[in-house]
Amino acid sequence: MFEKMLVLGIESSCDETGVALVDASGTGVPRLLSHALFSQIAMHQPFGGVVPELASRDHIRRVLPLTQEVMQSAQRTLADVDVVAYTRGPGLAGALLVGAGVACSLAAALGKPAMGVHHLEGHLLSPFLSADPPEFPFVALLVSGGHTQLMRVDSVGSYELLGETIDDAAGEAFDKSAKLMGMPYPGGPHLAKLALEGDGAAFKLPRPLLHSGNLDFSFAGLKTAVLTQAKKLGDDLESRKADLAASTQAAIVDVLVKKTLAALSQTALKRLVVAGGVGANALLRSQLNAACRQRGIRVHYPELAFCTDNGAMIAMAAGMRLQAGLVDLQGLQGSYTFDVKPRWNLSEFQPRPVPMG
Ligand code: KG4
Ligand code: ZN
Image (cartoon, rainbow, N blue to C red; front, top):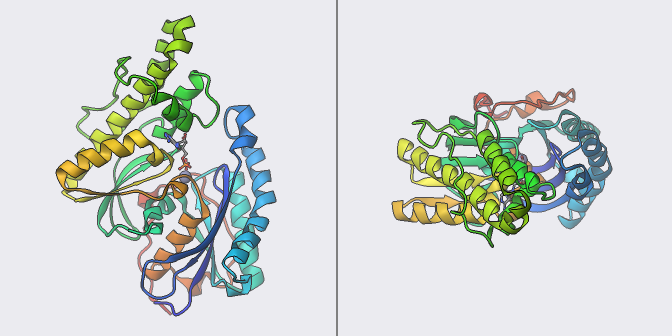
């Protein structure tokens, strides 16, 4: 337990610069003091996707002003910060390097330790930022633009991979299908909005690996089926777009819900955490809520603002890791060399507890 532990968190793995300050003093769930976010979506939109070099340059522009904003709104100064945490991976190498470089420089200037955080651990623990945080153990459905995974989470730092996508992520399936239908990047929320006006049963689209007997996913075939259907519709695509959007969403959500229920019965756990950008999807939420209510399972979501990338989840993951005694702070002190891990498997990231000094 730390008498005083203020953690500054910096997220820069993709197209959002996020900074936050969390108070991890004592033994309670760390408390979010303030956070600030700048989304680069508008900048990348004309290119139909994230341009890595532009992302890195924009993170450089945003990260220090956002840090100042966070310190001001929390009415603290940088001298109050005890640990500077940053996203070490996975993500875009250049974008990660900006956050890591700034975090380590700040930490060196302040004489405080710098600590690398796993981006997916941030997503996994993001529901702890809400007023009604989950209790361990739980099944986690992690659905973002880059990942689709089912995990068994027994405690902070104890993550067992139950299943994952063998090709595209769920967010990618949303985004690529939306792009095929002419929607702007990132297409997920646009597709979901248009789907409200359509019939989810209008087109029969594949549910890949639904009956595979394991907890893996595959979404690449769905995108091809959507393309084939769009071509078949030809000039009629415009008038049937809402139906095609609704049918695409129904197929993705159907697979996510069925596999999640299978993970819950396989583990016999009665608690589910849904995290990552696709966790904001209203159909996914309503179907999971209904199915879990029937089975006596509690479902936890991060607040909508913390579903997509943000600094609060990084500061929170660092704070929870510190509280759990999983971080060798003395070992980190004075060591400001850093690397980033653009590819990084969370189930391999399970350092053992270290003695507290
Ligand atoms: O977690 P996130 O910000 O990024 C990664 O770490 O990858 O998730 C972004 C993804 C995008 O693919 C976006 O289209 C999707 O989340 N997304 C949605 C919705 N809101 C965001 N997909 C479906 N429905 C939504 N409402
Ligand atoms: Zn993310």
